Image 1 (cartoon, rainbow, N blue to C red):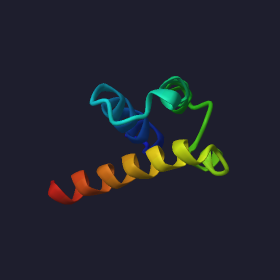
Image 2 (cartoon, helix red, strand yellow):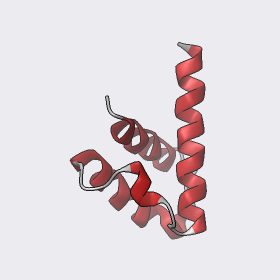
Image 3 (cartoon, rainbow, N blue to C red):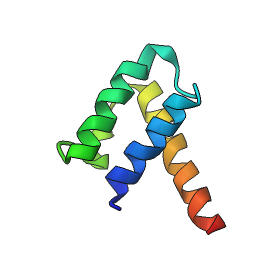
Image 4 (tube, helix red, strand yellow):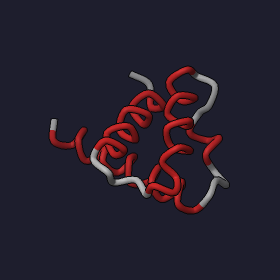
Length: 70
């Protein structure tokens, strides 16, 4: 699975867990769709809204923590 697909999956998990602020949930949902379809890559997220960057960083940290457990 590509890093973009992993990120999209983790962001979706965070949405389902209500760990994403409601104010950016629609944006995160759209980002997930674009990451999964290949329209966007992780580098495209640089310079995004600070709340989006924070959510993406948390998702990447969660991915890294999960990979260490396996």
